[in-house]
Structure formats: C-alpha cells, structure tokens
Length: 235
Image (tube, rainbow, N blue to C red; front, side):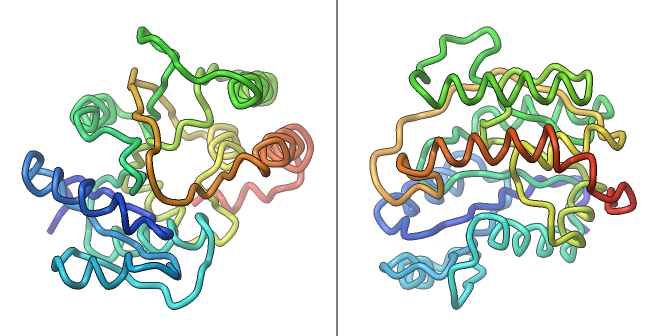
C-alpha cells in the first residue's frame, strides 16, 4: 500500500536531545515522507520522549548496534510495502531536502542511491576520516570497478529489492563493505550531492576512538573477506 511512498528509517541510540527536532521538521515540512524511529536500547529518555510525542517508533529492549537496529527498520519497511527506504540519522546531520533528488535518481533504475559530500559541493570533512573514506572508495573501485566518491556517507536510499535483501540477510550491515558486495553482485548504485550538518548532541555509532579501527575493518572486509562471501546471499 506504500509502494509509492518513501520511508525514512531513523536509528536512534541516546538521541534524546536531537530526535525531537529531527522528527518535528519531517512532520512539519515534509509530510510526503514517512518515518519510523528505531530506538536501539537507549539508556536515556529517547524512548519515553518518542512515546510522549506520539512518534512512529519501534523500541528495541537491548542495544543491537547499527546493523541490527537498521535491519529492524528495513523489516518494517518490507512488511508495510514501501517502495524505497532511506537510512537517516537521528542526530540532525542528514538533511531531508535531498530525499526528493535521491528518489528521482532511483526512479531512473538504480538499486541504491547514496549521498555524496564530494560531488559539486564544498566538503568540510577532514583529517583521518577523510583519508579513510578515500581509501575505502579506492578499495571499492579496485574490487568492483565502480567509482563511489563518498562511501562513508550514511545517507542512503534503497529500492524495494534492497529492502528485502537487508531484511533477510543478517550479515547485511548498512556499511561500505556491504555496499561493495552488493555492487559486485549486480546492484546499480548512483550518488547525488548532499551536505550534512555537524552533530551537536547525542552519541555517534562511530565514536572517534573507534574511527581508525572502523576504517581498517572496512578495508580488510572489502579487499579480502568479500571474496569469501556467498553470492547466493545477494537477495
């Protein structure tokens, strides 16, 4: 029933200070977009706030991490019949004004449309994260032949086929290595230019102390482990 509508899947771990502004903007300014907040075992007041405000929410009793949290949202998208779903941060960094351009691009026949901070717009990301992102982009190009300019940008739109794939495969985390794997197995990927806002509150899934480990893990996965993943897990 929702095949023509877009669902924003909003993972939220301890986002009490930001989630209200994020959802209220969607309700006020983007009524054409549906959303679901997935509270990932938050220990602050995020679940209570969502209940109080009457937000569409899925509450996880324990912290599953981004992969499990996002998969919960994708299962909801699948069950509710959405034609596409968007990975959307609950901390205010992702901007909803880019969703229309992403949907327009997806309607050209793409399976995944990714936001890129490096296409046509000034990029403010620097330091080790910028270097790591470029190394991951290089590894994806070496292993798939596909140029992805900003593989670590979390603003991504997925088609109905990808919603089903993420819902049914436990090893499909919303990370660059899974995007690389899907490209290798035929997924068509495009990018649209976006800007992201600075995080002001809440707790990031990718904390600074773990950023370098994350980048190394992605590189190892893309360059080595991908070769041993089963192609039958594609969908």
